[in-house]
Length: 159
Image (cartoon, rainbow, N blue to C red; front, side, top):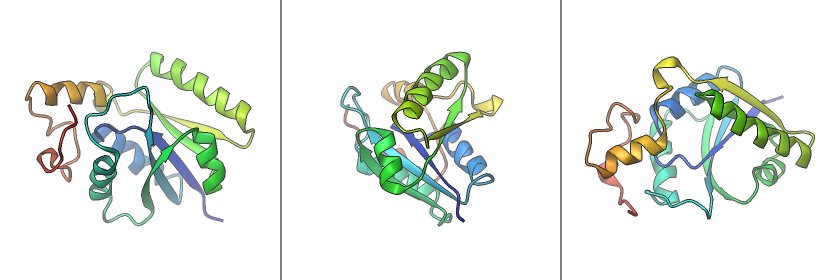
């Protein structure tokens, strides 16, 4: 039986920390579904299609990684795909508290859901999409924070 995991997030933009988690998840699971979510509460720098394209470029040589968009509850996506493992990266204790709460609610919504927490590699702890966006807005060089396959100039920013 194939074991799959969903890695949900907004990935605006996708960072080397995200990529590192996917590579590590591939050591535990046969397939990783990177689910690029839309949260109506958030303002995005890159359109969802562009974020998916960025991620697809990073994993072009990994057929066991697929990327797809989704709206709504992550548990509904799990049911739709018949995949009940979620992977979440933890950088700080604040991440743990936030992710723990979401994981517990997901479990209440569907008892089959299991959230797997992975500690982020120490060298990626300070990297977040929010920080990368701030560097981009201020015309800084983000090349050390995003995978080499992503060329941001290829994508239109929404703000």
